[in-house]
Length: 231
Image 1: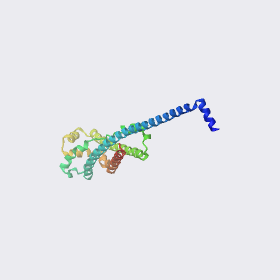
Image 2 (image 1 turned 45 degrees about the horizontal axis):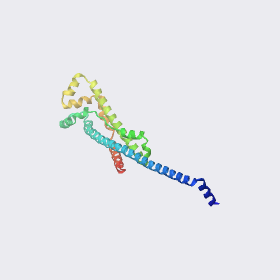
Image 3 (image 1 turned 60 degrees about the vertical axis):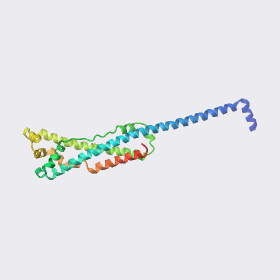
Image 4 (image 1 turned 180 degrees about the vertical axis):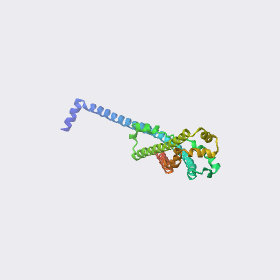
């Protein structure tokens, strides 16, 4: 019975057709497989480029955080001395007061960059990163970087508001003494202003060294993880 069916297929010319159809199907499957492989490779190349940019961005942010921490710690050294001698600035050595003179009027912020991470988030490339724990750490780290940036900028704004309040509140004579008088005048006159005085008392509570250290540690750890993954 089977032999008869085979003869019928040959008689109808179906065997060559089936053979050709099989070749076409196999060819299509191979083409699809190669296309998928090439597509996956292309996507991984895009992921690599994106994460390389994120790594560079994180390295720059880490540099900015370290710089901001150094400036903040410098400020805290003089503000610590001022708090201990709030009503007796003359107890602080003149050399020390001159050394930190620029700190009083210095306003600065943390120049954080998130462009590369935002591009990665808004693209479809996230789905091609299989390590979900890595993605979670990426999100958390940028969250911590954003938090430290907001806290430091808030610190700087409150300090700036205190200085501005003092400048707008004092009379012409005291303003002249503040800018051209003795080093003691330079410190004492702002400290008579309640807004600036409040900042000196409470500014160190707006951000802590532990927060800086945590942010640096998380950022450095993520940079190393990206390097480990070949990016």
